[in-house]
Amino acid sequence: PVDALRIRKKPGTNTSLLKKPEVYVDVKNRAVDEIMERIKKGVVLKPTQKPPQTGLDEDSLEDQKAEKRKAAVREWQLLSENIKKTGPRRMQSRNIRHDVEEPELQKVFRRRRQALLNAKESLHTADQ
Image (cartoon, rainbow, N blue to C red; front, side, top):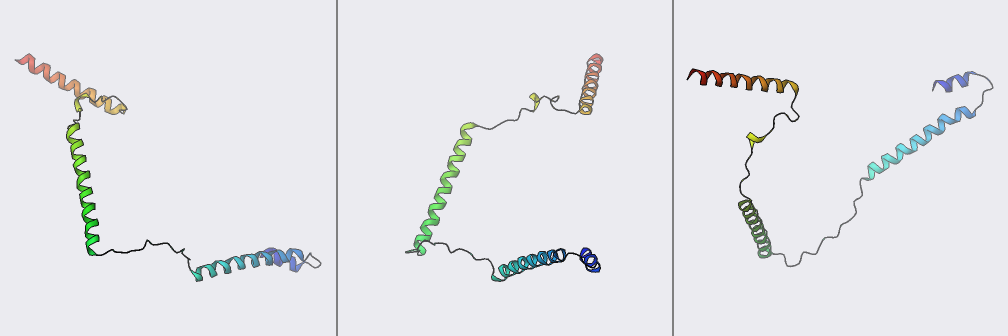
């Protein structure tokens, strides 16, 4: 906007510079108008093909529900059988190595704790 005012003040300037902002505004206005029209018209959804619902009465709906329940029960039984076959999984907490990916401070604390426990055990066994 400031450039357009400067150009108007100068006599004998090129008028093509004045037309560029108008063209830009015109394109912008057309784009805004087009977007507004699209918004006003709303989103057009494509129609979907629905399967024909012939013979779906209450009995057939109940049969379908019963089949789904039976399938769920069968799946649950298979899962429980697989769990029984594999047996319970036990965590081997005693075999876990503490020095893998352990921060340095935690390593120091663990060593000190272990040294204190060893010292207490040795004092306890020496007293007896």
